Structures are given as structure tokens and as C-alpha cells.
Length: 177
Image (cartoon, rainbow, N blue to C red; front, side, top):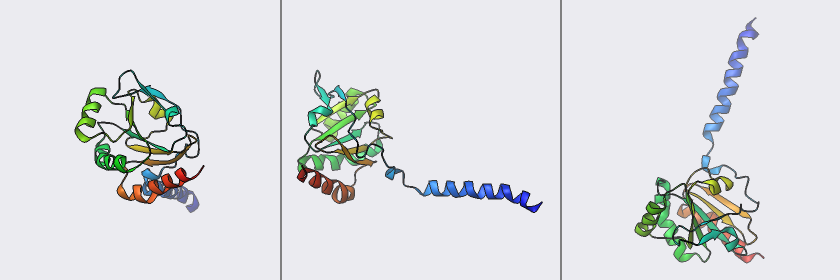
């Protein structure tokens, strides 16, 4: 009879354990199923050059970074100054993907804060972001010369992540065939 009363308590403790474990995980370290797989292809209008397009094919044979951002994203503003510095010192293309945004405010934002990007693809409806598995902004992807995604940063890039993770990976990928 007492065993019958313990079953709900055991079930509750198991559920509470799973909840506690889930709450202890860092959402920035969600593994991406795209790591090690070909980058999803896209061809989008250029935000800053009307009539031109931006395509993943433009970067085939190069190591490059794709940074997903938006004007409505507070964390993107935090990260932006670092990206401006990176663009001055990094010899690989930094491509912007303006995600679920409006063109005019995005252009003004880049003009006011500086434009770290070689080009900016405009993903107004967010469909390309969905293909890339974007959880939110900012997100940054490192793509190798063969078009394979090698790294994904969820949330803003920090100087530490840049120094300890991204730059060593870029160097390794540049040196490899």
C-alpha cells in the first residue's frame, strides 16, 4: 500500500531532475546539425548594391564568415564594434546576412555604426535564415574552402571567442588544402 503512494513522488523527482538538468545547459552551446555539412545555398539581393545579388557560390574556394544580424537585435549592437575591428584585421570575407529586417533602417544602421561586411545579403522574410538553422541573432558561421560549415557561434562574438576559437580555426582552414 505504501509503494502505491511512492510512485507519484518518484515520477515527480524524475521530472524535476530532467528540468534541473535542462535549466543548467548553456543555450549558446546548442550543437548545430549543420557543422561538418555543406552550407545551405542561397542567392539574395544585396542590401547596399541594388540590382546585385549575394550568393554562397561567390565564396567557393575561400574561408569566410557569415554573420546573421538585424537592427532590432540588441546583442548585434554589442557585437558590432568587434566585427568592425575584425574586418580591418582579418583577411577573409565577412559576409552579413540582414535577417528579418527592413532595408532602410539596416542601411542607416551600417552607415551610422560602420560597415564591417564585404557584402550584405538581405533576407527580409527569414527563409534563408531558416535554411541555416538560425535560432536568433546574432549568429556567426565559419565556412571552409569546400563550402562546409566548420563552426557556429550562437550569440555575440566576444574577444575571447574570437581569439581562442575563431582565429585558430581560420588559420587552420587557410593552411589546409
